[in-house]
Image (cartoon, rainbow, N blue to C red):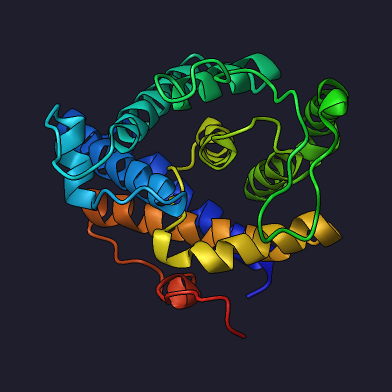
Length: 267
């Protein structure tokens, strides 16, 4: 399917969900808890956290898991708190701006690298395995201002899914922080999607290679089709989860044709 056809189909499925709003309180809470847990687990696992999904759940319930590092525990706790912060921002119809991005990052790195939490990097870095080099640290205020200017102008002409995917990719390419850019970028991705009424997208651990390949391609060539396709597939999964619970609607097999596969970056 072409992207515009996928966007149209997803808009239709979102409209089905919107017709059911407000959802029953218990249903809404259980769906939110399910997706937030999976979001935390997969986003951290992509970055190398070794907590399993079940271990992540018990850590978030306040239980220490033996054999796991203190950092891994904080990564789970921090990410959950960052999700709550993003949800609060969405509930307040808050804008996406540098202040909120830095606050999200501050939560992601709290008690892990407190001196760097919420602060743009003050040195240059390279991204292992990437074809591009992030901008010089002295240019970060300018580059981040340009990102926000793009978002507020040209970005607004894009479909929300395309805009969210590009915002995420452009942010990751800038790599404004020393650590935590991936987690912050995926929180930013869902911040934009949730502002537009979509459920959060979960980039799965098993799709890590395809995800990195899509990001690298987009950063190197400004061809955002692959990463946008991946985001759209994630939305199809999340909408399918909601609609199956709310109205017993099964996922659209056409939309989920690729979403159900384990991507390994192979042709």
